[in-house]
Image (cartoon, rainbow, N blue to C red; front, top):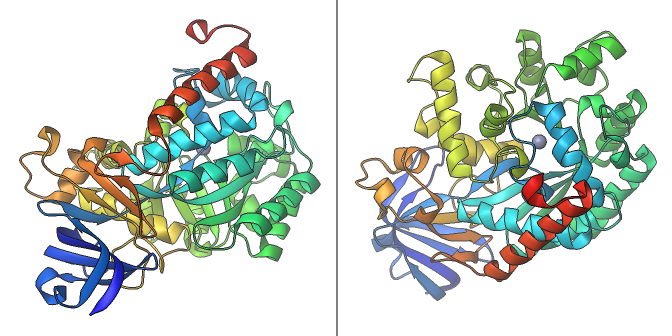
Length: 457
Ligand SMILES: [Zn+2]
C-alpha cells in the first residue's frame, strides 16, 4: 500500500480535463501537494493509505477556479464612487485613498480578498497591484495570500505618467519600480505558490520611455506582463494622439505583446486588435461585472474565443465589482454574451467553467500545473455541496455551478494539497478577526483620504 497525505473519497469528480471526465464515486489521492491518482473509488480502495481522509459523499469535486484579475487593496474601498464612469470613479475613490495605504491596511485588504476568493472556489489569484506609496506594501499583500493559503501571481504594477485628476501621488520613475520587481522576484518567486509579474497600470498612465523600458525589462528577465487594455476608448484616443497608432498595435510594435502578455478587459477591440492578440499568442482576462458596473461596454469574448485567443475570467478589484465572487462572475459572463448577441446558445455553462479553470491556467502559463484534476497536477480544488436551496434540485452540476450557486455551496477548498477552507471554516487565519480589523482599517483609510467619516463620502 502506498501512503499519501490526503485522500478525497466518494466525491463526484468533474475533472474538466481534455476528455471531460466525470467520475461518480471518485477518489483523489494527494501527495506532496500534487494529485497522484484520480479514478473510480473501487479501483483505488486497496492502493492507498493516508494521513487524512475527506469523505465527499453526495458532493462534487471541481478543479479550483483561477481569478486572473484583482486589485486586492480595493477590497477596502467597496462601494465608493458608485455610478460613475472609469476616470471619474478613479478620481473620487481609488486615487485619494491609494496614496494613504499602509502595511496593515494592505495586508487586511489582501486577506479579505483571499478569504472571499477561497470561499467562491478560487485557488489562484492574479493581484494586479499598483498602490505603492511606501515600501513594503507588496510584501504585505503577498504575506496575506500565504497566510490564507491562496496561490498567487503578484503583478507589481506602476505608472510613470500622471494622467487625469489626482494621478500624481502614485507616479514612480521606471528605475524604482523595475528595481522593486527584481527585489520581489528574488524574495518570493521560488516555487509555484507565488509568481512575480510586471504590470504597467494603464496605457495612459505610462510614458513612451516607461513602456519601452518595461517591455525590454520583461523580455530580459523572462517575466510575464499583464496590463489593462482598451477598457474604455481612452487607450486608443491617447495612443493615437501621442503615437499616431492605436494602443494594441503600438504595444505590439515595441515588443510588449507576446504569449506571456495577459491583456485585461479588451472591451473596445476591432478586427485588427483581435488579430494582434491571436497572432501573438497573448491571453485575455475578461471582467464582465466590472465592465457592467462602470458602464465600460461588452468585451467581444465570444469573437476572441472563436479566433482561438485564450480567454480567462477575472472579477477586477472589489472597488469596481463590488466583490471577488467568481461564481457571480461566471454567471454574468455567460448572460452578458447571450444578451449582447441575442443568442442564448453562445457562452454555455461548460465554456464558462473552462474559461474559469483551464482558461485561467493557460492565461498564466500554468496549464501543466492547474486548471483540471489530473495526475501530476497540483491538488487545487473545491468540494461543492449541492444540498442548498439555491442549487436544488440539481440536474447538471456544471450548469448548477454557473447559474445556481453561492459561496455557501463551496464547503471545502484545497490549494496545493493544503485544506484552506474546511467544511465552511477558513483554516489559515481567524476570519472574524480579519473582517473586524479590515472594517476599522477601511474606515480609518476613508477618514484620512477624504477628511470625513465614511457615512458621508
Ligand atoms: Zn483592473
